[in-house]
Image: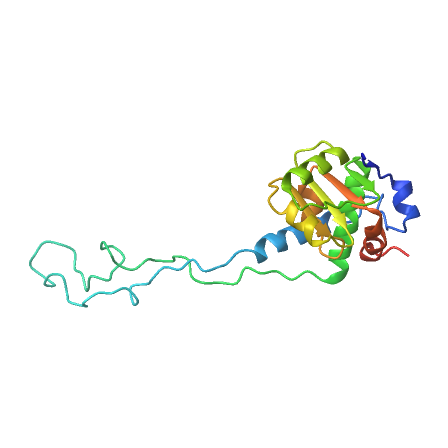
Length: 204
């Protein structure tokens, strides 16, 4: 059974807070930037001249060789020497407050609904746990390259069927985030997820 379009009126009926006045664009930017920054490990590291393995022996005498004076093999100008101003371990994480995350989520969801990329379906389940069955069922919902299916929860067989699909993702309404809403070409929201999405957007 094909999914049906999810309109702004339907979203309002489901008590999802929609943002039609353009607010929240900066919040979306801040949240996406923070999410990507938080995934960075920050473990890039180079050794300074004090950390590289070197004997400390003076390469040549101070005077009389015609060459520039040199105090040790660990100098950055030597092969195998230390690195000047290289990367050091650091924390890239950024914090975003709860109200900003909620605003960004509501804005992203509203934008996708306005673009006609959000659809609804009554339920979605794969009984045999096979990827082939998942592909057929997903194709029956909507034809797209990248599909996000949002529900209140999924049984183990459905999860097993969908986990090997490279371009589709099953996500609960509690876990879906702003980045998910922006990445996938089409979003199918199951009926049992509407209440949770309404609460997450701040709808009454």
